[in-house]
Image (tube, rainbow, N blue to C red; front, side, top):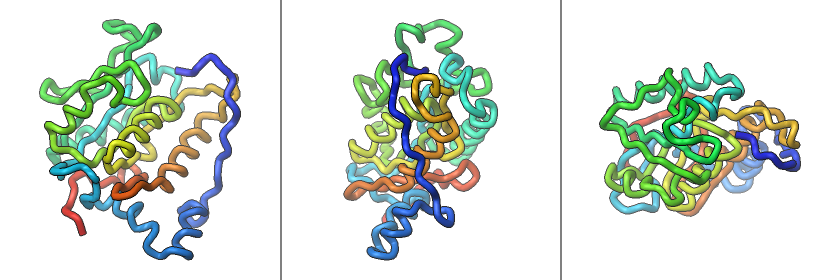
Length: 233
């Protein structure tokens, strides 16, 4: 949910030919520099974590009050439902993240996961209090038990818990793929934020350009995302 403070607007960078300008520039100067972004959706094992050959789908904070006023809520929730169903069919673990706070109290209707999504009893549920889903939670131990080193991330809100979790995962050594049409946020423009569509576009832009030593980042649409992973090329 929107912070009650004024934030400076974010610059939304242009795309060129379906790729960001930085990628085009990097490709021309360093032909191998963008290979990791391609590999991010080719399911290749690149993670710096040992013995983590599996992929997990993280469904972040898709709760009633979190998405009640979210941009294109129904379409995004439908895409997440599709990802969850595909993951189950392909035997990719689904890990559910659920936020709690003073305004999102445990047990209330607003705290519950949206009715369009149903967690199976054998799917891990991680409760959190901070934006980064790893902070003071069981997420790392859950992923270690699953032997997951590659994360496919969807959920809400784009400019809060989704971004924090993406960075937290990459920093901790995970390959981290954002599903570009399966995350959303609400309109916080009255507090100085860009419109939600621009927030989502900007997040997709910069995550498609993100990189770290020995790890991959990137984006893919719900239709194009590859869930099961391959061995290192």
